Length: 425
Image (tube, rainbow, N blue to C red; front, side):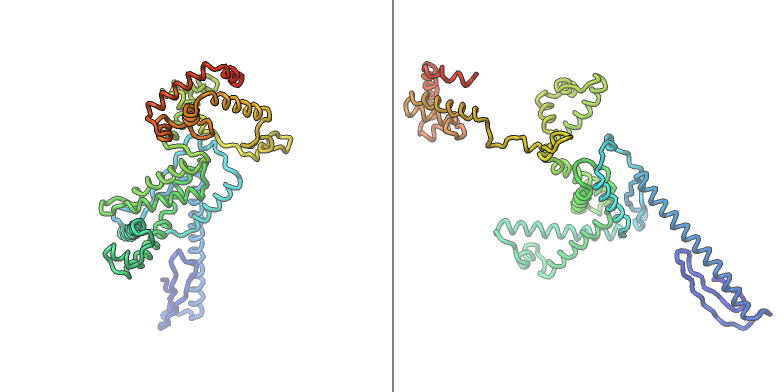
């Protein structure tokens, strides 16, 4: 507050660009006219306000430069509580770029969507809660989870959705408390997700290019965040951000393992696939060529069949709409035969072979022919074991095995068997 003669002018603080004038009349103590005093005071106020405005603009420019720097160097912002437990600070650390991440080339459309999402996330206002407030939000979410578990238990036992009275009776609370728990749990989930959205985004960005879109990564990370909140125990004195960090990473990693591929791979095979990729890089530099399955298996001390299986299952799927050549419009689906299409020559050969097998079985007794048909699945059915065949024909397993062996021995001495050798060659 600046005082000049008989007039006093109230100036605002720096964050505000507006200023207000407050004039108080006092007995004159100067020989200058009152109009001159007022003009000098107003000129001084305008000068100070202009300086304050320049400071605010400089501060805004500094803040914009800081945000641009955060995006440029990919600084991860992780909320954490100060020692007093009241304030909420920001721990910054430069994210180490994962190996091979720079080789992923995202599409233009996906990059545009990711940039729009990042811009919308930066424009959002995130609430910052104290440890006491977060403990209260966690309590509401846990109560909602307990209510949902009770609902599922009643649904499984009774076969229908429980009423509010049944839920209240099972949990030992009043009926009006059920609606209150549901409302508090829903609001707490939204507030926790909004408060820790930046943490989820910072973790999700390190998994780009792994098969899931940016939206799906954020969604899976939010699910992991809520799962961590349900397991969090504030009384132990740990920070929620530190505890939920690993739950978010686990949820995103599991989602990539189960949802990023058309053909799902088990979690153990993902580890083998990562080791194989690293081993192939090492062996390629050492041998100056791509290694074989035997060389990779020997390097990793694994079985060759395991390496071959993982290599076949890790191949990316090929679209049937893919163009066969660069200069034509013929697609892959136009030249691939369907499941019901076959070569006419093979169809005739198969029909002839079926007739020869039928003639061979007709040389046996009815019981021997029936047992062979059931045991080898010659009628188009799934092959059965001796025990299953015995239950069908009401014989013991050992007796079925004996009849099966004698029937095969008879067929070996038949001349008709020579006619079937043509189909084997």
